[in-house]
Length: 201
Image 1 (cartoon, rainbow, N blue to C red):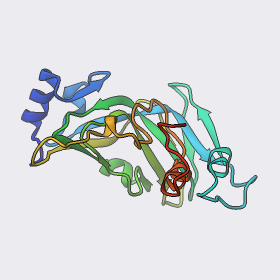
Image 2: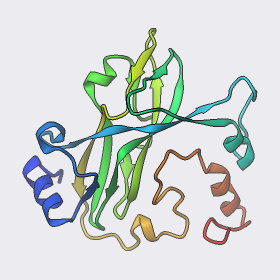
Image 3: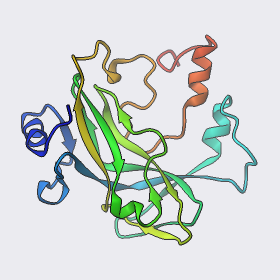
Image 4: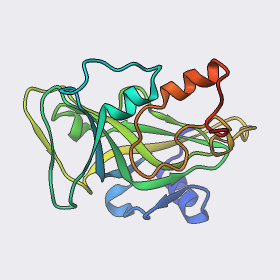
């Protein structure tokens, strides 16, 4: 069951769902979702320095990306075909019986901007900012500003509290993130090959 605006307010007031900083419900609350705002940190690929990415090599992924900090009143320009990781201004903390679903906003999509590729589900027990995979699918550059409403979170109940909330999983890779993080697929491959885990490293 997806929470209605009424139930979202109840969840926020009771502390069952925590959003920090607290949203301005007058402008950020929808019928079944809460709008999150764009943060100030972005990560982009240095495609002029690297010809390809090897997902088995952690340095290949990390070194191929550059972090850009944008001032609160400064625009981040996305050229046609650009891809960037960005984080929400808000931190989200979910209980063990709710999952979050991130979706793009229609007004942003109509500019040619998508805010996620496939990573739309946030498991019960999630805590941290949301990293978005921004892409410009249009033919014109688009200016994005920190603080603008960039995506919307809805919340859905699961049949019972999960046995292992995301924040307690030994192999969780992104819990507690504050800024966007590059893909940790290489670490996942290492664990699959029996070469250690994030918790051990």
